[in-house]
Image (cartoon, rainbow, N blue to C red; front, side, top):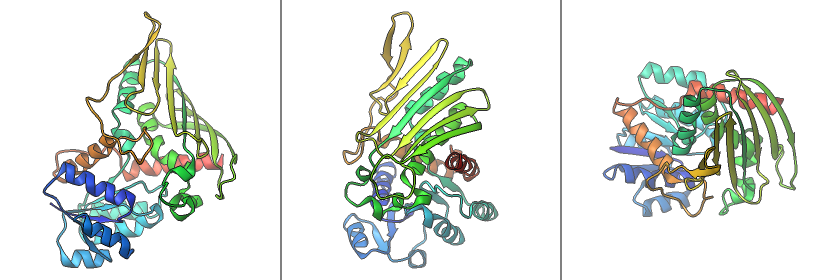
Amino acid sequence: MELLVVGLGSMGKRRARLIRGVEPSAALAGVDFAPARREEARALGIEPYESIAAAVAARRFDAAFVCTAPLTHAGIIGELLDAGLPVFTELNLVDDGYDALIAKAAQKGLPLFLSSTMLYRAETQYIKRRVAAFAKPVNYIYHIGQYLPDWHPWENYKNFFVGDRRTGGVREIFGIDLPWLLDAFGPVKHVYAEKDKLSGLEIDYPDSYFVTLRHENGTKGLLAADVVSPKAVRNFEVFGEGLHLFWEGNPRALYSYNAETREKEFVDTYGSFEHDARYSDNIVENAYVDEITNFFGVLAGREQPRWSFEKDKEAIALIERIEGA
């Protein structure tokens, strides 16, 4: 399999490493404007090119991964589709060009695969199954926060996409977590939001949101998202009469309350898991591997993607309702 990785920053290199774990025989090439990144990629066994045009002129690829900043995605995806390549893309956070890209992919018969890593977390899928089986009203409380300068400790937060208002840190949190909440609890009919700026961070968007979501099935959710919390946190709790689940964002911290023993019981959703020490403990590698595996299954015609541009368009519309509330 010949694969092209567009964008050789931290996520591009991460995808390349994980691809090799899934498909050890895959031949990897990469595109990046930065000479230093191209040289680093070469040292990692990734053949580097300065442009997509140069790469597709030199080699025939089976698919491409888009790992650049979100605001660049639409143009890059369009160019890759024009070159006849199926596309896996990281979070877009904006729906620029969605309709045209969906139409182009359909016209050419090419898969257009959108990352939504939280949908591949064993914990979120467990929560979804338990809520569905419970089949009675529930509410949830969810706090996601992490101090923005800690997101990429190796670079200034003003120098990558979270410094831009359209793809800011809180918006990325919404982009990461709303898909699995919508998948588990269904569409949202009412939104109420309070937003604020608590920090001295040099950003031109609110750094803290409290959001109430009323889902169409009656579920109420209280979602707190911020880029201020000194300790990275993902604390989720869902409860109803006869159901109470707790999750602290990592595989070691999913619990179900047993009303008979009056104790929280650990739920083991992973036989084993991998963690990259550069990131918070609530980021595990298994979900990234599983969505890459799903993409390869889509390419082979034996699987369907868990997320789509059509679904993401609805999620982005919800983010904009939250931001405008």
